Image (cartoon, rainbow, N blue to C red; front, top):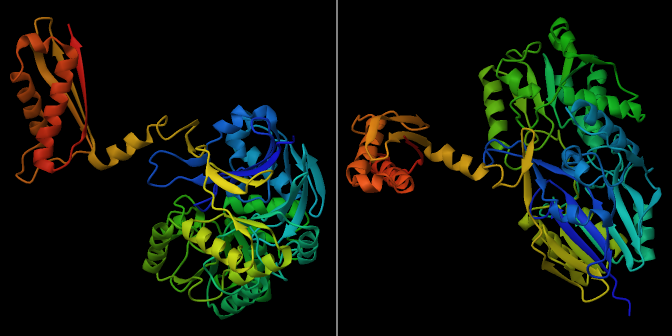
Length: 554
């Protein structure tokens, strides 16, 4: 009896925005062959002090390494391929992607210290590749980066459409538009399951076109009296093209500021994109151009402190400065969690009397993800038997699932990172496999939340640290004076008493309360001093710091 089943299991990108990574497996329980779709990264923030990047936990993949036939990348956004440079060597399985993805992996790898060379097998859009028992077809989909793809995954148990990130745009600016005809053909072939993007599942209507954004930018630049600086995602090649063409239409030069932008421009030009645009000048040329003759394209649309826009807004960029009456256009949308950083940049620009225009003021941005009318069209074309909402937070997933049911989908499966969904070969259902988790990159090290000490750092950021060193002899007598170091602790309490005196009182309070015999027990003494110092400080501050006590027995 054939016990083979087809399963889907996300490890990242479900219940959250970013860090996309998913598995498909086929075969009997305990003996499946696997493919990995996308290998994304998320960027750490203040909730993860010291960490730089966040990855999906791949320890399950490492245990199944010999059964993994390949990694397929849908498109070249960091949250879909950025973990390759840190984690691929742990697996060393074949990687497949479009030409744009392959060139981007190569270019980014050259720019990253100690990054391993990662060979990428190039698959043309519309082409197919056999990866173990999976036949993968790359279906062109519009997105906010060239060569976005849905994956039509054919198996002996059925066809699954993994949409990746997508939108509908008949004039995407760069690259082909979504291949609606092919989607309709797949629907006629019979789609078992659609694993779909939920990012804009709460937004009614359809997205505007990239062409509309170019027209709006052209009008804004035409009405600007002085310099115009436009910031967008470096990967949005179509937007870079739109800005450059809008500048040319207004007889202005285009200055590119930011290494990430240059990297994407170079890769795009190698792939044959960005041909019908004016010459891109470097930031060294900025100061020599007349104010009314320049449009600058900047990195830093999310308020990143080291990116060009934040440095310019703070007056810290070495070659680019803005003046009163200049204009900055934020041709992007805030990623959740970045709002505070963006507001800080806008306020710094306002201090310089620089005008700021955002998507709330004009049609200067279009999302790369489908709104509800776009999702409805996709379900009409594809007609899947099963829908699995992914790529979104809880509210997006629920809204997508409800819409899928309204469109007549028979089964809508609810999954989270680390859950398994059986699509064929048994009862259609989903369940928690307890394989979710995260890894954190901190400098050159990678580990779990606990391994990297991030929880302790977070605690230290709230309550500070006190270190105490005490020397005692074998009789239990205290030698000399205790040494103390206070980090992240207020200088004085509300009664103007020094906290170092408060700590000292806690130390001697513990020591005086212990007979010499007990003081000879290093562990007992250490814990007594730790508790006493925390208690003393808490009475004066209403916070309990982290206290470390070192006992030197001589």
